[in-house]
Length: 184
Length: 199
Image 1: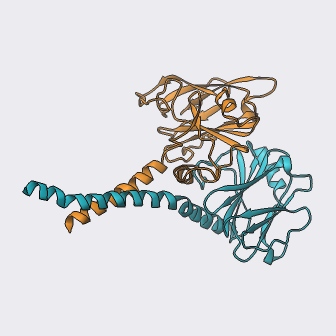
Image 2: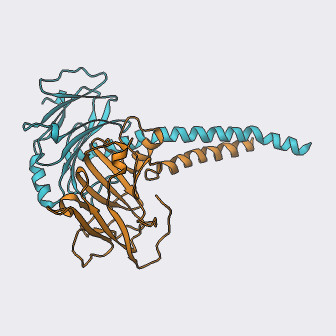
C-alpha cells in the first residue's frame, strides 16, 4: 500500500518533467535560427560599419574565417539589411564568372537569389522591401520582398585563385547596399 | 515539492540538450544519398522543417537553395571509416553535370582546419583542366610528392568534406542520386583510424 502511494507521488512530477522536456526541445529548436541570425547580423553590421552597408570580405583562409563552412573559392560581400525605416537599394555589377546575390529573411530562409545569368551587362539594380515598406521601385529595378524587417544579403563571386580574387575586387568596387533614406 | 523540482530541471535540461544535440549534426537527417555523399534537398528552402532549419543555422548558415547550389557532405571514406587527419586518401573524380563545383574540408567545429598550407579546397577549375574528363588528387596532412590537386587535412582531426555543385543541370532526385561524385579511398594511416558506420 505504501509502495503504491510512493509510486503515485512521482507520477505527476514525472509528467511535468516530460512536458517541460518537450516544450524546452521545441522552443530551443524554434529559437536557434533567429538567435544565430541575429548574431550574424550584428557581426556583419559591425564589420560593415553599420546596417545597410556592403562589406567586401578578404580571401577566406583558415586564419581569417568568420563564419562556419565558408568557402575559400568564393569572394563574399555582405550587408545586414534593416528595413524598419524603409526600403534598401542594392547594386550588383556583372561579373566575368559565377556571381550570386542571395537575400535571407530573419529566420534564415533564402527568399531570393539572383545570379549572373540574370544580370545584364549594366549590372542588377534591386530594391529590398519588407511587407510594410512602401514600394517605389524605379523602372528596371528588381523588387525583393522580405517577410521580416531584418535580413541579410550575401554576394558570392567565384574567386578560386589570387588572380581571380584581384579581378573580382575590381568587379565589385561599384556594388552597394544603401537605405533609400540615405539617398541613392 | 522536491520531486517537482528535480523532474522539472531534468526535463528542461533534457529538452534543451536534445535540441542542441539534434541541431549540431551535419545533415543527420539527410534524405538523398549519392555514393558516400549525402544531402538534404530542402536546405535553404522555406519548406525546410524546424529541425533542419536549426541544424543549418548552426552548421551551414546562409545556404543557397538547391536550384542555385546543392551541398553534398561526407565524413567517411569509401569503406565507411571516419575521415581522420592521420590517414592519407586518394581522391578520384570526373566531370560533373554542373556549372562549377568545389570540395572543401571542415573540422569537427565546422570551420576550415587551421594550417597555412593554402589547400583547404579543390575546385573544378584547378582539378579538371581541359581536355581532361577525370582527375586524381590527394587528401593528406602533408604535401604529397605525386602531382595533382591536394586537399590538406592538417589540423583537421576527424573531419568532413563538402562538395558544392553550383547551378546543377538537374536537381531532380534521380539525377542527384546518379551523380558520380568524387571517391575518397584510404591509402595508408599513421595511426589507427576511428571506425565508423555508413553515412
